[in-house]
Length: 505
Image (cartoon, rainbow, N blue to C red; front, side, top):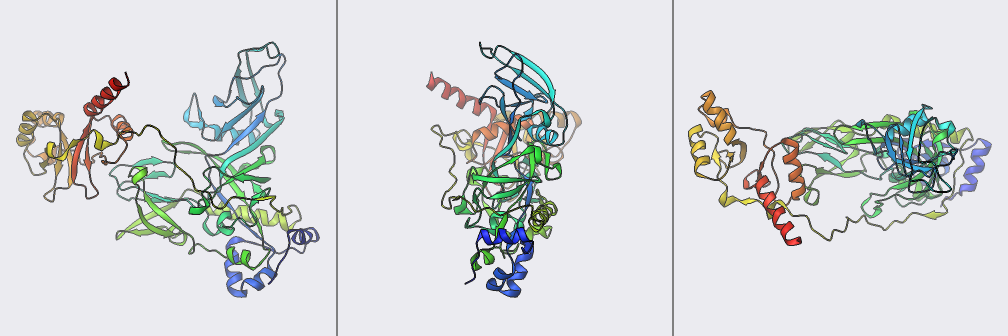
């Protein structure tokens, strides 16, 4: 049994004899030499990841003004920061949006602009006290004017991320990027075989106090990240570093269309090869790393796992789903992750970066729990018009037939179904009116084929968002075979809200 200590490895770093490889090389070394010889051959494996990490932010200390102010609200380039800490301290999160520019600029951009040395406009308001009499201030500062700019990221470097796709007939804009309809694409995150927590899944060397590469500077792990769920291979890290020392090559603001702002963060973690077990675990490769492919077109609580998929398959550019080829696209950069690992490797080889022993291990048995809700949201099934009451019409029907059904019934929306009773479209009373004016004859000429639908188990709040987003007043409710099981309308939702309001009164 070969064993080494962190102290021994640090002595090799100091005298220049240390042997370092990036994580993507370790599997071949272990395969060729075996874990025992690989432990003798390699001292440190460097990992890396570079991806969107919304749960990131920076604490600032601005220094005291004259006369002094106790900031109650503060904006940096019109992005509000949190000030409920002390008089001139504030924290800005990467996902906070600009009051003026909305999703075009956010906290992530402020952080990058500070790191780049750009001037930042500061505006603050206060209520005024005897010791802090000033009530407002406006100034312009750069990062050099700050006493501290300390990055504290509550949740970074997810061990594993689910793959996202979309079964619906409309595009979804999510934290997993733009998901095209009908399984038009699949998006994924993470660097696979380079990812830190897949190279140390037992948290043997990654723990509280571990020194890391953070955005081009030296940083530290200060604990497990929020939503830390190692039982399901979803571990996370909380990290700290000095923004004043960071490099914008490894720190970039980004915008996810119709979702919001985020910060791309480069994290590299050295793994000292202390024994054969650690050597074997750092030999993980993309083929070994498997994650779940989920349908984001389905409500979160009922979201199905469509299949298991490896990072080797994901990185190939396409995967197979139900006999269909689905294009894959990474939201993180493997190129930059490799650059992080290479940069950290160079630091260690040049004697600029010593390995640190964790002062405490990260928990390995925690599970991420959903929010406790004392009032359950009503679901679509609580308000929908049932299948027996919904009148559907075949796609080869005439305009006259559709008009008669609408006139005799109480619905202004008719689901259009195929011969096998699957939803293929929808027609409204307004469509009928236009058809009469333009002398159309067949229903298929006027019906809407891209139908926005709902699931019976979907929270009603999400349906309300769909109605508002697409400016419509009714949705067909369908099952997994696209057969109509009911209809949900804005009138039905209003009646439910009215009943709930009267009960509370």
